[in-house]
Length: 369
Ligand code: GDP
Image 1 (tube, protein in one colour):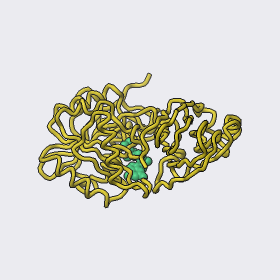
Image 2 (tube, protein in one colour):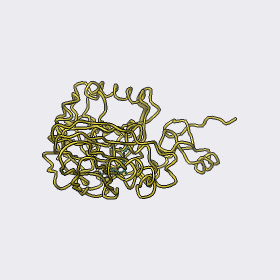
Image 3 (cartoon, protein in one colour):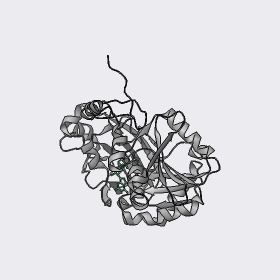
Image 4 (cartoon, protein in one colour):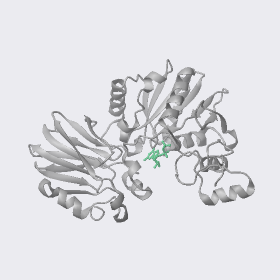
């Protein structure tokens, strides 16, 4: 029988089976820790030794508790979203939880936006989408956690809107919140300055507080997992392929009705009915796109998934969820979005279908570009 072990940093129950979840520590590190009598989870270990925040996710209940606490503070709420996966970044009901606190909406990963999309247009689009879900941000801005020079505007906006108060940074997982926090630490604080303090009530996680000049703090909060993101069905190597690292280059396809595009082996787009026209794909440049006849598409996928159509890689095919089909009737310029992978812009009225691995959402939205 094994004894339950707790992280001496954050109090989470230590486990060695589920990387990325609370209390995870590799077995080898656990063995070493037991020898020395000091067991840290991987997250606390990295925080102590490398001054590096690792992404962590909460359960839905814990996340709701955290959100509830936000409403009781007098603070600026910074909501980080991934502009490449806006729908997957939404925190349902955030506007109800923040109380009277102002929300600064920050679109991260601006470095991968196609140049053809103007910043003003993007922030305006984000503001409209936020309003649709009831969120009224005091300001909307774009940044890139990977570009130090993109930090200036963000830090200035935070100073302006926090108005002498604390700052809470919230976001779902994968939006790049940890990378952003690490970038902020680099620019504003030192290793010694970081403080981990008392837990959010009911959650098993400590807050990470970055001191600001006037004695207030910028506080990193854990994220929540949006299960319908493609990222949760792929291995680390595949993630590198689908997560754009560089500016996304749009690709234009002239399609006749009854033609199909495959986005690697991850998603499929059927042009079912309508006039011949152009369709523009916005996915990571490393995802290969293949065109087939709709009539042959099932057989083509069956034959080539894991081969010509990658990811998934050959050894992943047997565990990869089957593609699920969603049909849409399009009336105006529309994007069909494959959660976490990218989107295709449609310019003419037509009937289409989008396919994604079972569990991953496919939806349409007013065209971004
Ligand atoms: P978190 O779960 O929100 O904390 O997200 P992470 O900080 O772990 O980032 C998720 C993924 O997005 C990682 O692969 C990062 O390298 C990537 N990422 C984060 N910020 C940026 C950015 O500004 N630009 C690009 N291109 N990728 C980013």
